[in-house]
Amino acid sequence: MAGSAKPVPDHGLGHLRIVLSETAYVGPGRADLLENIELTGSIAAAGKAMGMSYKRAWSLVQDLNDGFGQPLVMSMRGGSTQGGATLTLFGSEVLAAYRRMEVSAQCSIVHEVTALREAMAKPTA
Image (cartoon, rainbow, N blue to C red; front, side, top):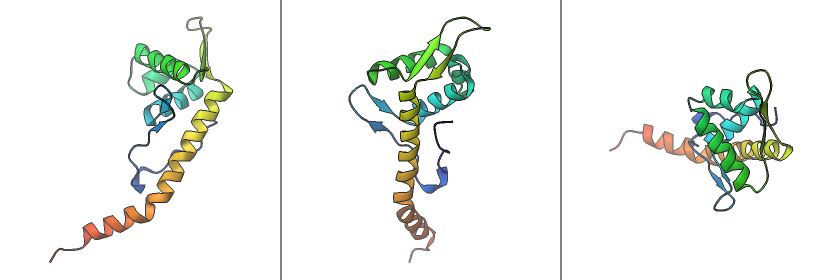
């Protein structure tokens, strides 16, 4: 799998969206879709695993491919016995970079989040 392990959500980072241009951006939903496509080999199965319709999953794939100016996902037509989808090398690089940025962002805020949680736990005067 190209993406590294997902970060632990209890470290204070609820949502990270990386914006590279008006059309090229990736956040947790798009990253999860890419990861599920990588795992299942199918846009339909990836979307279903996330509770979204095939149409919505396909639309996000098109947005990713168009927005980044090159394919992140390659799909092959063919129905249930053929076809499928796979991440391109660039798609794998985008997913892995996003997962690294999630971990990096969490690591950089963990001390401040801990301090705030400790402050919240102190009784007020």
